[in-house]
Image (tube, rainbow over all chains, first blue to last red; front, side, top):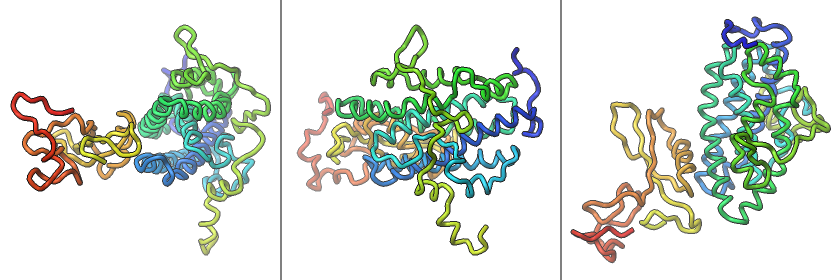
Length: 279
Length: 104
């Protein structure tokens, strides 16, 4: 039964309790990933292969932090204290992908984050564009508008490196390592969280629908690296997601979290210690 | 960097000219250049580099796509070759004349 023609939810408190819980979980995962991804982009302001690419990384970092800020602030209405969320959590409480736990040491690994992971996050946001949870509408549209350029950046660079055997080999490695985490991000086939959001018209597609959309987006390039293939009109991953060790709550591997350096940066520890009143 | 829009070192990089306008009623103005290996990245670089205004429209074009009309010098160049007659590289190029196709 479709619920899309029903009236919208004007605020988080209008949502049925279990749906509010699920939406809060998903938003926290999205916010943490955006925040950490911004840090990874920012590491390439210097050291990118060209000045323009460095500027692009700087712009994408700013975008990601902006997106994280927006989503963290939404979480106030889901019973979270944004100060605690942003500054006071231990590593194990973060919901960011294992791909973002530590800094990436090569440009092709950064491209895996840019092309594969950033796109996976955008696809999840796309599922909320027509959400019955109305407070998110404008925010998601603006965010996805900015993300078009992130995708073009990842796609443009991927195309460029594909043009030479050395670049192709580097991408095969980097994309191959990031692939499973991206497949798993959307959740297992019977994922209760996204199912519940779809049933109430809060999201427009469940885990499988989102994964299929992501595969469609990255499929043509992934196919050239042996990671995907087309069957009829749909793109399929060359391998099944491996759910061993996956945490439904954190939507990532249960083991791990941001490393010490990343955690200090993501929470702003060093700079906050400068504040005299400790707030 | 040479006048033909290619960039030294990275052989697949090309210079793109960036134009933008703030309002539908405005004319395009030349806002700068970016170097990029393909059009997709040129678009991204232009948008993220020249973000000083909230542009209504922005567009990029390969420098190679422009044909000089009266001065033997690529249009829009910052730091391009000096004008003809001052010992510029243009003096040694064959100027496109009537019936002569411009050099690629």
